Image (cartoon, rainbow, N blue to C red; front, side):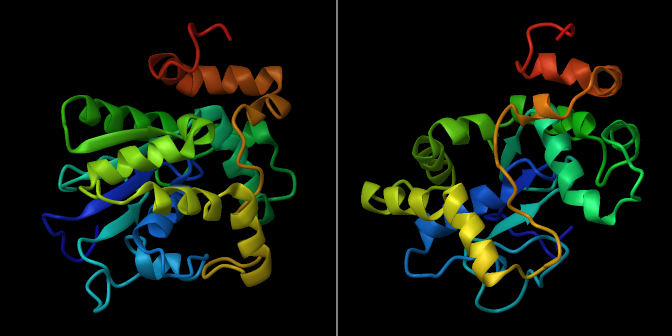
Length: 238
């Protein structure tokens, strides 16, 4: 939790590897067109809860804050990003691989414990809250892939920034493209964790290349129901 929550704060929340950094880049590039947004400055413009001083001077007001926290009823306004859990774990596995024991298979990774909790519980609790609140906007990773500009407009409207013109939207989308973000990471590095690559593929449906039959069984047993509830599958027999 941040040191102090203000009534006009907006939290950008997601399970890890669901598109949180992408959303932050989109919003930062749209809201602060004069800024040079990269993997260093993003922490100054939209800091992460628990990693930066939330009360420091110079932080944009109203604040946009990043969080991976499980459901927090104290967050006054939330943009919640959801992504197919199979793609989430695929991306998370590749991201964590440098720090995992060499013999860690994807199936054993799926069976293990994960920070901050398992994907299904994180998504279930936030989505249930969103169904009962106008102060939580749900953004799907897959919709961002389909039309980043449309989703950026939705987010800007949600945080009462409807006056931002199309002249700012298009450049923000271009500056936040996967290709440009990967280039920025390669050329300038990141503020945290410079060893492993953060920007990998950013694709939807990539899980199919990694999921074996045993991995499918493991995922279905633990989290398959949530896929159906979110509409990623029509029934549990995928």
